[in-house]
Length: 127
Image (tube, rainbow, N blue to C red; front, side, top):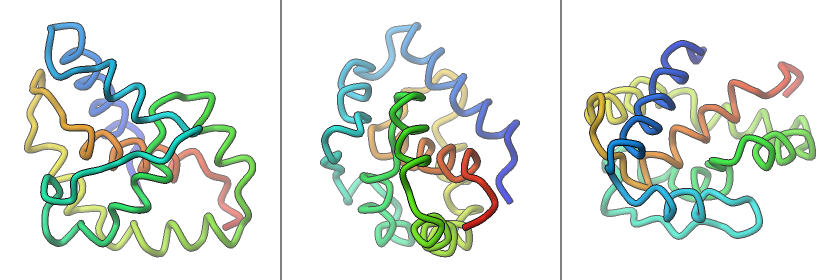
């Protein structure tokens, strides 16, 4: 299962990067809104993770309140389906996110995968 400490560390790295003048954090925030599906560039996603890009676009919501609302409104079946699709690739996702290093700018694509993992971590165990 996902480790909360890893996810929090990744989120902190994104915030530090934004504060240090890293990637366009405003773009990532706008992209991470639940009100619009993200447009992610699959060429910026490792080949083995590309099949998960549409799920990351849907579930990778950077705004905590919007992500919480999406999780709360999802069905147990949708949560189970997301876990079944993503968790077998958890180590590949972790390795990819770790490749950005502390203080490095994370792409919108990587941020979406990170936030998708947060959504899974925040989900009730029923689905």
